[in-house]
Image (cartoon, rainbow, N blue to C red; front, side, top):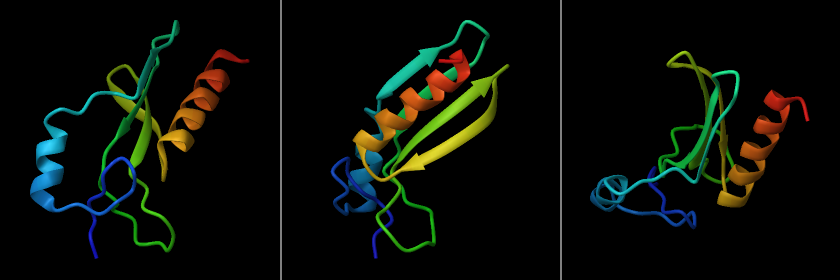
Length: 93
């Protein structure tokens, strides 16, 4: 079973994943007025041991150069929605 997946959730080989990681760019990155940074990226690596679709997207919240929160998602749409939800939570909306 592969642990590496493209952005459509299809399995890929390790070397394909490595090549794709060289051109990775954030899906969304939102710097907050209070110093938090919310960043959502495709990681393409499913390190979970649970059943279900691979969790290959990740939203991280950074503050003072440290990770303070993290969520993973199976699809880009879920990741974008999660990013928006976290930004709204941090802004009090």
